[in-house]
Length: 293
Image 1: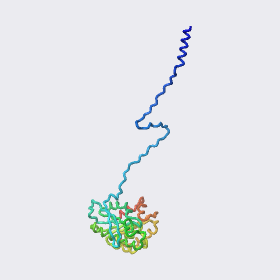
Image 2: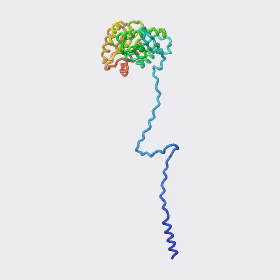
Image 3: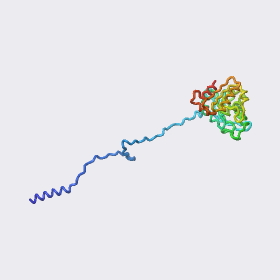
Image 4: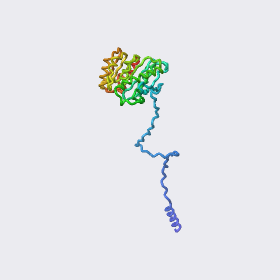
């Protein structure tokens, strides 16, 4: 009896000291790449924005920079240093023998770069012509004596001397040139017509937003005396210019002249080219077409 009691007590004692084994859980597996932080767990509803990677884009070289060109300086009889860029005629048509020079005169307060968008189009359309973009006196780099802010009427009229010296220089650099076309914007068109009226080798003049007497620089006699081809463009809401354009057209004795008025805009000078870009008859295309005639 004592033996049975001792055995029973031993069994009870062993039961008390036995440790309870916890239920085994499925191990959590985390994929870790050496050198990286483990990714945080993201709830399905959370949207993670994709990192924006800037696209690598190559900047296109402006067309005008692809043209063969040279900057030239001349000094006028009244001591102005005049700078201009000579864009050579297309090589496949023999650059040593252009027959025409297209001279570009900017508006007041601007410089030759205002024609940067138009030069390549002229260059392509007239492959045997040199294109000459000018900083006329008092503008751009042509300011050794002063700037246009101090000009009086006589200074604008004297600007024809810039063209005289440029023509002399072209006679040396490009002696094959026999005729000239001049494009002028605003008062630049006054300088163009004033010079053209006295020089019979100027076969065409284009006047963009002209005035009969900008800064008292009266060109009515020039309009009456210029006999060759004349193209005039102006905006209807640029009232002084549109009225002047109509008068110049009426006074001109030319047998080959055109007048284009753009309605619903007041854009002046070179801004008229940009303003008409989406129209049925963009001014830049009309200019090119007229030069090619």
